[in-house]
Length: 248
Image 1: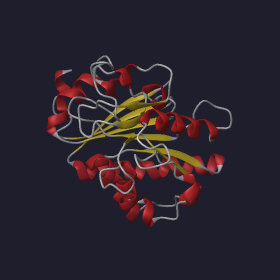
Image 2: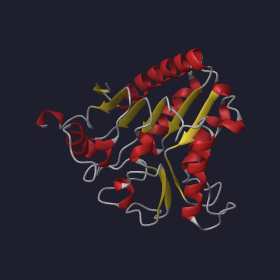
Image 3: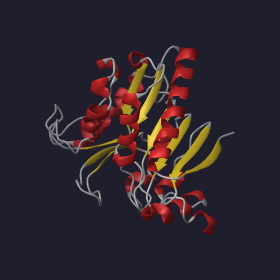
Image 4: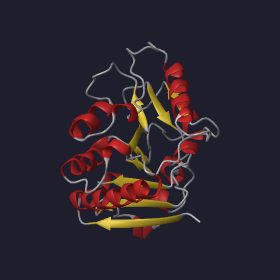
């Protein structure tokens, strides 16, 4: 049965340090068991800080045997600094011996799919399927998530078709309330394929959403409430983000 844990840290740096250590443990354990590991990266300040921490100290991870996916992406031209894959590359991927064929980036708006995010989303869904040995998506070992002040994760915002999606693993979002409006995102069914779902949340401006999600809110109202791992769900919170938990 999946277990939910809420871990509180003094500040964002302590949160990142703890997540880095646990990430190394989970990935190296997966590699010891199966030879490879599969992770989903997230953007945002805390998520990118974790990648920077892994660049400087990733323990015994063999990056050449890690499959790397992205939880969402801004449908912008390749190389745009707002794209999650660009930020992840600068923070980590350009500095470790990751195998290029094991980094599964979401399409850019100037890629082969042009300006059609629906086709780009369908193509990423095919990538997930092709890499999973017959399973509907890979068995992600860890899905990293940030969270917005209203509780959004990936590009799943409250009261949208994307957060309500029950079947597809990847969808296009063309009216994101947070710019840019056009995005590609994994859905809650895809998130729930991960063994371990980790939410890295810092800042008092997110405390209300944290309290609501941990308290069992509906995912339509607070999308992060629907992010659950098959084995564990872990909230990594700094003091600000955790400040409203006693009101749950």
